[in-house]
Length: 333
Image (cartoon, rainbow, N blue to C red; front, side, top):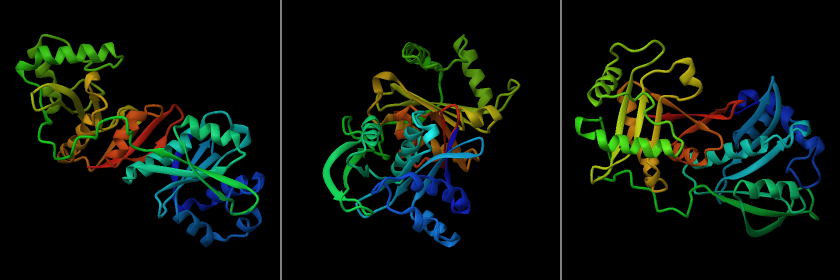
């Protein structure tokens, strides 16, 4: 099963999914009645799709569900969330709503809201699980004046952490590893590995040999079979302390196109939640552009909310969520 964004040329697929949802919908659940939508022509479906960002879940060529991100005067909202009865309980709803949240965050919005029927306990449980909270607002459903809808919203940027570093922050910089970095680098590596992160797994001493190895990788000299040129950079703060790193792969193999992408980044455990991840990625993108990468592919696990926030905060456009739960994003450099 994959989740992806569809365009207006796929209006037939969207029509099939939408009519499937409307055919079983209770009064007030969706804003368009089945009888009305089933009579739409191609132009009407294209216009309906143009008003929102639509994501579809598919398996073996069949559509299993959909969700839309709808721009509005009060900010973006989630709309048209539906999963085929035979696929419910499989986590598809979580992935679809998460895709809409990525879309909204990448566009610079701080909040995402939605409306659902007050009596729909399943929808309420889903949105609570995903972090939505009640706003206290209610309204009458468009298709049934006796049905009440309630509003929930999701904070797309956590309010529990300090404000992210400014893009003009002079203290953070990216640089290559040097002869004097061994002790600090190995200490950061040990902390990351203790935290379950396989950082610098290619490290083998002595230190001069390791520096030579990563320099040859940067210059594409004597690469091992199946590897690509790469630039490994340390992120250091104003005091010269290593707070994280980024790794630019100059090209993609089939394996990297699925998992790894053009850029990987990491933040040391003690520096997380301070905006360093976003700043490291933001400062890495121009370096990728200088290497001839016009659009950078980034990947992360679908349940890694922190990484999804970082990538979309830097303008990452969700392309696909694969059947093994890997999110693929494209970022302009």
